[in-house]
Length: 320
Ligand code: ADP
Ligand code: MG
Image 1 (cartoon, rainbow, N blue to C red):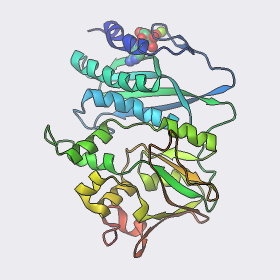
Image 2: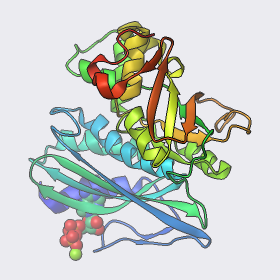
Image 3: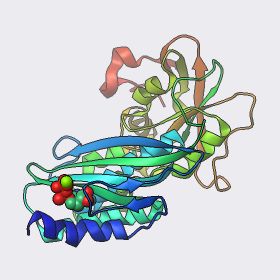
Image 4: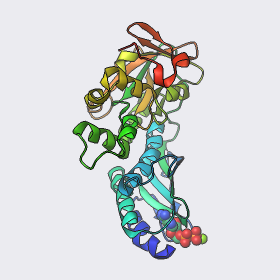
């Protein structure tokens, strides 16, 4: 299959699956033409997924397609934006039709779910690598930013953490793994970008980041020149993760592992606790407080857990 039949067979139908009124010219020209509605600004973000670096060899193509779009949508969510359109650069060692069909289906499933239109891209031969550049819309004058937290603000996180990190231990699991293991793998393969929450946080004036590198690392990105005191026992973990790792092991993953794509945000102390959008269907957990001094303190039941000295593999061994 040459490059052009590949575009006609896979990318054009994917672009046609969603019709946004802002898209004037989609796939088929030398560039796309997209209108920005009056009173709105465009948010632009990009992420590359490289085989062997960001995902394992032989990752199922349907999940890879979903995930490639999901990590970009998660950045739009963290900005409080509404998805608009995206471009897709695919580098492939060979044009396998079954692989491409499943990959395109995986992207399409999430694109339809979030109403984001594919408007162009590039297709080249080489080591497997996927780059998506996504665009979203924000009302003029608004954005969810990092680094404007006040000392004393609550620190909150959506959903549960640590499951995608645990999934890395099970990528070679048998075809029909135990239900708890399946739940971990699902979380890793099909991250759900928290778009409704991001827009809700924007309206509330919160500052936020998405948890892609791990809670402790991303807390540093969120707070910039402030610090945090985090309650070890408040870290939200799923019963499935606890069943596999125990409460303490689950919290260790929740603190350090990445790839969960929840939103981490600050919330004023004098406001009612955050409910999140849609009547609070996604749990929102207060995990700590913004402090004046920089750095993150983790407080366990027996006192301070020193991450810097104990590192990822050891900290928390006597806690929980
Ligand atoms: P050009 O030679 O001008 O770069 P191409 O021949 O590469 O254009 O692409 C033709 C059309 O197909 C363009 O509209 C381009 O955006 C689109 N396209 C190519 N690859 C992809 C892809 N992976 N996903 C979506 N659209 C693509
Ligand atoms: Mg051209």
